[in-house]
Image 1 (cartoon, rainbow, N blue to C red):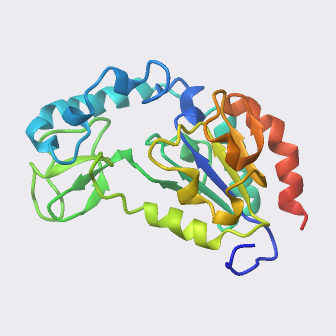
Image 2: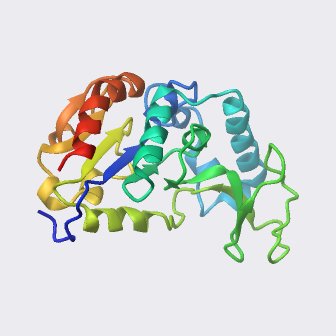
Length: 248
């Protein structure tokens, strides 16, 4: 049992990666013929060098926006949003590595985007995050706080850039009890490992740790592994998770 205070009703922590949105037609970054096999990370997604390649950076992320403009939430997004609606944002914590807004469009009320999103901009001069104006990132956008232009970047977290939302992972690790459920969906675990999310007591095939992925990584942490795409895996687990969330 974690040292966190026992709660009367279990919480559900859902950690999702690119596999959650792949069935909506959004290309993955790492798996298969992913985007990072075709693009230079150092050129378009490195916080230490992005200002030298500012036009390429904006062009790259505008291409990602173009790729996703016709995407729609799939059944997996809808199931997760329905759970949050049913049990509330305090009991259902949705944490994603994805930069799309398909969970929100499916009806999710609160989503933690660990790696930022494609709908905001960040001023690296004054740290103000603000909504982008229009459908695309514009090179001439000025920060509404300090007026800087060259310091403004897409709101996606780059490699070598601080990611403030990771504090929520650490909080989750401290708070999680044996009663809580943890579901990982479609993550390659390259940047975030199960060790950084789960209390040590849950590091070995815990019965309330679930993994959904057609190519499972780190299965040794999970008591239940659904070797399926996100929609099928969540559909298979839906009744089991419903039962666990409604009984102590």
